[in-house]
Amino acid sequence: MSAQVIIIGRPNVGKSTLFNRLVGKKLALVDDQGGVTRDRRMGDAFLAGMPFTVIDTAGWEDDDPETLPGRMRKQTEVSVEGADAALFVIDSRAGITPLDEEIARWLRQQDVPVVMVANKAEGKAGDGGIMDAFALGFGDPVPLSAEHGEGVADLFDALWPIIGEKAEGGQDDGDGDAAGEDDEDAPLGPLKLAIVGRPNAGKSTLINQMLGEDRLLTGPEAGITRDSIAVDWQWTNPANGETRDIRLIDTAGMRKKRNVVEKLEKLSVADARRAVDFAEVVVLLLDATQGLEHQDLKIASMVLEEGRALMVAINKWDIAENASSLFNGIREALNEGLAQVRGVPLFAVSARTGKGIDQMLGAAFELRDSWSKRVPTAALNRWFDDALEANPPPAPKGKRIKLRYITQAGTRPPRFVVFGTRLDMLPKSYERYLVNGIRRELGFDAVPVRVVLKSPK
Ligand code: GDP
Ligand code: GDP
Image (cartoon, rainbow, N blue to C red; front, top):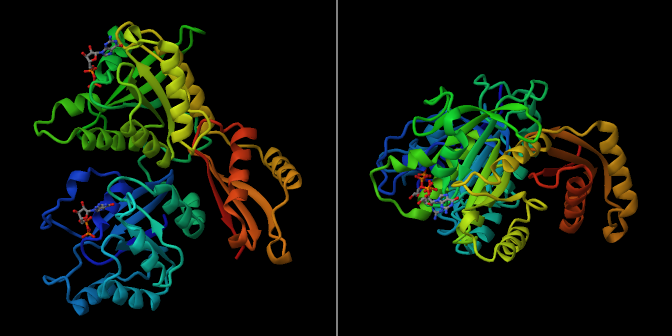
């Protein structure tokens, strides 16, 4: 059975939004007016590739949601007893309310590990609330923006030590199709590729250029939401004549079908979000005449936070001016803006002429290979021993922090657990040292890597 995670909190803190993020549903399911039909919901969640079952308790409130007894009784009825972890969500902008405190008191009496989530923490607006949340006594709150998708990696880091073992062990979710699944021994299927980017970057043109006359099969695929279209297609690599299967997730076409005018920003981020649910590799398409904007970095970060392999392609290269300084400028901005990886693969392409596309696709397959790679245990241990010897962990107050061993807990994306004692004393800088070493020396440069520290029970 897969690990169960229950979302708890007073109304309006963002439980449904978080639920939708975790299961990859459309944001449109949440509306500002309230009154959306709300049932108890369970869903299959993926967090940075880790599968689990998530239970949303939104709507368990009484008619008057601010009366506590009814709420608590109902929440107790469904009981957190079966859950492996509870996400206790507060609104970090609103701060801690009396109702939050009551829920906290109640949760402390339950026998379930609690992860405190300080939602609505995008920007700095939630800083005060995050401090207050600490006082509730469930440890460090995880600052999150369920709506904007920020903080997902931190949520993973908090949850994984609790449910990781169960999640990695019992991950047969039965559909066999979602990306990020850890079926390592199975041969890699078609490359699941999504093209995302701002409107007019050239996504539709690129897809049409790629498929050309070779369009083999079009149509909605089972297991893919009704808005996304998957196109299965065979690509022949001119570099070596090999033919490979690619499943292209078409988010561009779907956007054009909408009849409502939405804010552009919201739209392309939402498209990207949906695409990453299905994709192994995500290509962020830029427009050479527009350059790299803040929103592009936001989409890129989101892709990486979701644990997907990311590449960036600068389109319309046929009309690019000052090509080499443009390329270098974008290269630099990506290095600075995306701390999660070292060197995102960057390509110059023209959807119009087709130039650069085959190289980009060849690289996409390579990127998926490293995203899916398992480091042999011996090599991993050798690297770990060398890393500790070259730079031993510090000894705060004379007590040495012991790092005992490392294992690779998963792939797609690569996930590692470092076991040791007194880990709470380990400086962040040392953690970064380990993560950088894994990336650089074990061949994970361009893919997001997760590392979690854990004390043996
Ligand atoms: P629930 O009652 O706890 O399920 O809360 P909802 O998920 O319905 O969210 C309540 C409101 O908060 C909605 O208007 C959401 O759009 C908004 N919301 C949810 N998450 C965030 C977030 O991360 N940031 C901001 N600013 N608003 C959010
Ligand atoms: P989407 O909104 O991302 O799907 O963008 P479209 O594919 O609709 O392209 C937007 C505009 O850019 C169209 O006018 C395209 O003809 C143009 N365009 C797309 N790719 C290229 C390219 O490689 N070179 C040039 N010069 N124009 C392009």
